[in-house]
Image (cartoon, rainbow, N blue to C red):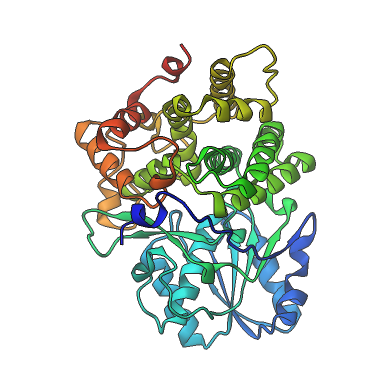
Length: 430
């Protein structure tokens, strides 16, 4: 069954569960006692390593202090790959672990969620579970997710995103798996852990939040229980992202973004996403660039593409962004929201089109760095016709695309992708 068949015309809408959560300064110090209460004995910690910080070391030592055995897999990559997941599954099985902890951002959490699903199915390849509720065993090992970025909200959602590098090595495919069985057992969000997040990474993660919040608000699912969270997450992002970006130890800014990313994920958890995410997934699949950066570049173009289908929804977004829309038509208010989003992108220093992204553009860059020959051969984003075509085709096959407000075809989406590659943002605002 195709994704479109599952989602259109959305006659029945499903509210997906959230895990229990502990949130606020110092919350990460509760991981040892909470793990013991959940019955953890020997835990596999999955992380990117968070190099340059002592976060992983401190949490692992705290767990050991509380009597837990800990095995560490610290090779999770940005845009986690299928082999990251399966290497962790092998380590989990060999060490005879009984539980998982993920430490980091969405990459660590997503890889861990995929590993849990694979473990629950006797080590089957994670790529077999692409799609909607493909797992057959609802029981898998318990999982505590400790977030160190304010971006994906993976610690509270039913989605995880993996890059398939093995099915067709010459055409990597980044996919979303939606599975109620992947929801974490406990989410821990502590804004103090965000203090060491680099400036540019903080900004990019913040635009991931803005995408997570705006897409379910305008989604064709039109899911009422998601809309309040969506608007409030937009408000919190606009109010706090600049402070969180430029003063990393500003606790109100960091805490504001913590709540923004958490409730934005709760909004899309049942309210759906759109082609901001589809474009981001495609760029990540082919170039291994950061998901938040991709969302930031795609967001203004997709807003401009979608708003003609419902100016009133984007007018609501304008109000959530703090814009005084009194006396404005919905059309003018929509354009004001777009201008505000572009100004926010510029204020936090994010690249404005994909061909502006180079090896020295941002601190988490992976352009041309590997780990496979495919990625080593992609040191720059081409943006030529062939590139635009393959990105567009990937977008049309993405699980987020059917939720997009405006109908998507190759002919309608290709100009959006092309503008993301080489277009000038000023063209969008006249």
